[in-house]
Every structure is written in C-alpha cells, then in structure tokens.
Amino acid sequence: MADQPLFSEALEAELDEVLSLLPLVEAVPDLADRVFTRLTDALVETLLEDLRARHRDGELDRQAYLAEMRSTVVALEARGLLRRSGDIDDQD
Image (tube, rainbow, N blue to C red):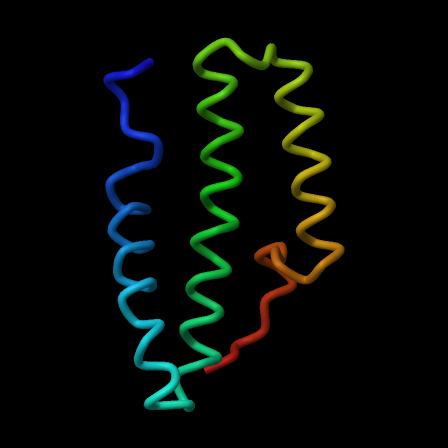
C-alpha cells in the first residue's frame, strides 16, 4: 500500500535520532555502546515491522509469516541481537 509509511512513526523517529547521534560517537567514545545498542534495537524492530507489513499486505500468508517470524527471531537470538524478556538482566 503506497499510502502507508514503511515503518511506524515512533520507529522512524527513533532511527532518525539514533542516526543523528552517530557523529557524536567519535567525539564522545563513551556513547558508542549506548548508541550501538539503540541502533541495533531499532534495526531489529525494522526487520520485525517489515515482516508484519508483508503479512498485512498479503505478500505472506499466515503460515509463511509465522515461519519467517520464527526463523528471524531464532537467527537474531543466536547472534545475541534479541533476548527474551526473561533473559534480560538489569544492565543499568
């Protein structure tokens, strides 16, 4: 659907903000881990939103959507890019 934005407004705003912080990483190296984490989280969310949009737009039927979602989540977890809420330690 051409009228719908590619990603949610909140995700677009998060991506814009994180990308605007990238030049600061060189000047303030202490920001690197936080910026990288936020960027990684935003990019993971874009992958998941893309899958939802493909299902919503009819590109993926329910079975294909669930299979794609499962394989994406498994791959992200295997690479340490996605954690289940019960696996998250207090990192602050």
